[in-house]
Length: 241
Image 1 (cartoon, rainbow, N blue to C red):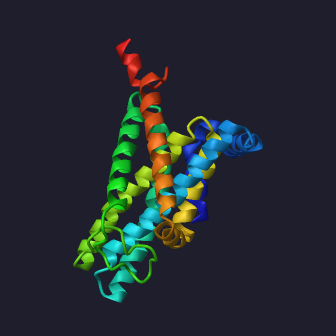
Image 2: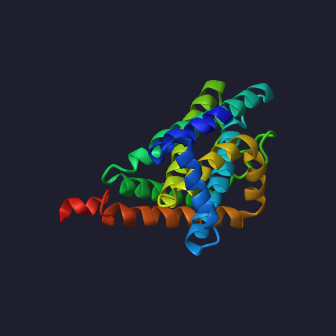
């Protein structure tokens, strides 16, 4: 997994001149981390990673909740591995995609849809008993799948959506801070693999964390929509004058 993380970081930042350029970007951004702009970006990236890693675990656990224990553990394992791999794959391409005119604006609109969906889920009464393996998924508002194949498919679809959301949000928040962007993408993968279940438990216990994460995603989405219109290089507005 370490090799995958390093490959993602290298491929995402190939324009920075290889490992030396990557390290220089990280050192530059984190040596100035006490500056308000850089610190605010880092906090945004950290909150996005924490919230979406926990949300991913909650969704996977809830979808698998209706299965027998052995099948449930398999689905949860598949869900975690798929989320890890997808976050790496999306990290490889997302920064290149954001250089295409108009795609920052599209990404911002996508994050606004994600925020609306999260808001709806946060206010939805629970319909799942939850999985024993994942703490905090008891009030997800998701109906568990009725078969192993159905659960595996639902988890795969959810992982694609949430992994793209995670990487897009991090890239949008830290677009002007490549060092923080690199660290944020690595954190997104690491948290999903190591601490997602723990984070899910605290998101469920302390609901304000979920609302704070939601506010950050709305802010990043709004900023991406604005930049996606006015940016002189990739803004859609440049096509209209």
